[in-house]
Structures are given as C-alpha cells and as structure tokens.
Length: 304
Image (cartoon, rainbow, N blue to C red; front, side):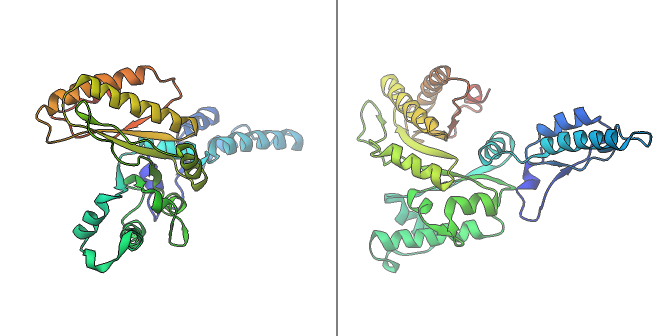
C-alpha cells in the first residue's frame, strides 16, 4: 500500500509500528510489505522482565532482535521492483522512441532537423530531452512505476550514472528496455517483429545494466486469425527467452486504431493471448502493452 511513499524523493524510509499485534503476527505482516522496516515497541520488548537472569534476558533480547531484523530486511532489487510493478498504482513512461519516430518526437519537442546533423547528433538531442525529463524532480517513483528505454539510452549516462541505475537508485523508477528492431513487411494482416540479432547478448547487457524487463512491439492491421495467432506466438516465444534471462517481458501486440475491424482484431487477440498464458509456467511472468480496446474492459481476463 505505501510503495508510493517510498518512491517519493522526499521520503527517507517508511517504518511500521506494531499497533498491538504480537511479535510473531507483526513480523508476518511486515514481511508482506516490501520496503517497510519495523519500529516496534511492545512487540520488541515482549518476553523481557525483571526476574530473568542475565542469560535469559540476553537470549530473549537476541531472539526478538533477530525476528524483527529478518522481517525488516530490504528485499533484493528484483524483488522490490517486482513488488512495485505488481502492486503500486502508476504508469509506465515510454521513452523508447527510435528510428523513424525520433525525428518526429524531437519536432514535437521543438527541435528542428536543422539543429542536428546525422543520426548521432539526432540521438544526442533525444538523450538530452530524455535526461531533462528524467532528472526533473516531478519525475519520480511516487507516480511513475517504470520507464521504457531505447538501447542507446541504456548505454548512456544520466546525472553521471548509467541510465537504468539512475532511474532506480535516484528516482525509484523501474527500468525497462525496448528490444525489438522494427517491423517486418505486412503479411496476413499483421506485421511481425523483424529478427532480433544477438538477442541473448542484448539481454545479458540489460541484466548487467540493471534492467528489470523488456518491451517488444508487433502490429495487427486486420482481423486475420492466422496472422493474429502468429503475432501472439512470436510475442510469447521472445518473451520466454527474456524470462530465461531473469527479466520480465512486456508483450506489445498493438492493434492499429485505424483498422476497419478493430473490435474483431481485439477479440481474436484476447483469445490468442489467453491461449499463450495457459502455456506459461507459474513462475513465468509477463506484462502486456495493448491498444485501448473498443469494448471497455475487454482485457480484464488477462489481469485476473
């Protein structure tokens, strides 16, 4: 519940009072609240009394201290990020513009093509824009769950730190990495992802950089069942390779909002995604990035 407080830049720590719970129950509840630490009073001193020998008193104090310490231990980074992704309200900031969309994003930001020459300078301008957004004090983990980065952003620094490290350690924002390399030609009413050369190497670099998850996009343009099943199949295949590296994939089978049969596309997509979910093991976790559906709440079955 209090994850947004922990993500706020003005918060140092969030501590828990026992409030009348016994030590065992208080510790059990505390363990379920990622990031909180104890500030127990009665639960801490329970069992200590004046008639104990020094040896008995020391043993009781040690047992109490150890139990509360273990319940207060900060989880590993991945566990804390997973808890944030699962439970905190907020949104993902998509800062992964690349290729043809980069120039357009810069124009909308107010930077004309005449202000840079070539792709390197263009990406420098884009990184300056992204850095300005991320370094702003209003960009923080209290409202923003995660940020999706382009590969070139992951490879650069923000505020003198690697970008993913800065996002998590300075902003409490979970870092994701865009891994697809664009779209193949349209076939069967869809555009699959192009092959991703050296995917394992890219994922290894992401892990080393502190990336939590990935994002990969394909596009659906018409309600062709074979094509939509192919999209879902490819998304889950890539997703499982991501999971094998200890990362969480965001599967993005986008439905074109201009599709004449958009609602039919979305129903076919839901069916294909549900089928893919049924084939995952209990520890294989995924996220979905989907076009806002024509039918409200269509995708609730994916969430339940």
